[in-house]
Length: 375
Image 1 (cartoon, one colour):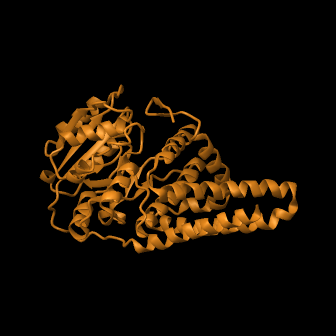
Image 2 (tube, helix red, strand yellow; image 1 turned 90 degrees about the vertical axis):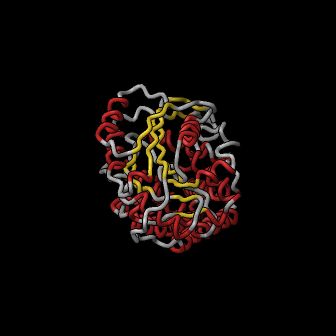
Image 3 (cartoon, helix red, strand yellow; image 1 turned 135 degrees about the horizontal axis):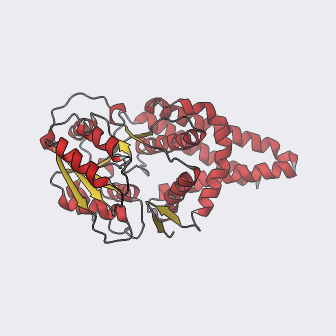
């Protein structure tokens, strides 16, 4: 049994080491003020986001890009709050922007994919850019996408995300978890094994999206518009799938405001992992779950039989150290280092958290935007 635990630990160590190396291989992009050439359709699905829309809309109004080269498509997914007055006021005060308010046309089990499909059918430009209603986009967002497209000629671009800073322990727990995800995401792109991205900061070629059939094949899954599209793009155009590693392209979003909402979010994210078509994605999920389960089992064995203590400490210290190297690289890039003071405590709590979420994801329903979805 101990040999199995050691093999899992070595495999995990090699995986995270590969992500650290891959993170460094993705070059950091700086704004070179390229001439704006590409046209963008910014798509934002929303449902009952009246508290978040003002900040998002304000950030969109500040975009440093010719107004005739982009449009904003706001897709209302059966909202029941006072969103309309906020959006109409924004439209009136920003007559120089092309803004479209469209109602979502439901056709599948996935409201968000339906919303994006609805928007794409109504879009006028060559590049699709997506973000979420609880986000704020950076002023040079489209400028960086334009430059990246001109230089690297991608068809699919993943972009960086960070949480808006808060002072609660819940925030730091979420932030360290998120930093590890972003670091692994960038590292995956760097080793040519892209397996994660985030729909809050994506850009892809509309024609290519249509050519590969869009979201067809995974519409039964409520979420995953980002990762499943990445899988399809990587399969058909592996050399054209890139990550825009730029500080000026970081989209800021809000962390969950309660433990209940956070746990539900993690269940939603974990529930789609069994439907991944990418074998590397499955391998990563299995190794992360197995490593955390290994340490929990070893911890219990240590209580029952103290002679397991050395194995437990050796594997635990190895995991804490290798994870830290990836997280600190990511936190430096995102300028989000304050959560590191809680790293040791949260690392220990995270062992149980991963195993519980991973186990519940096979059994439990989850809610999303006021709707309940089955696994």
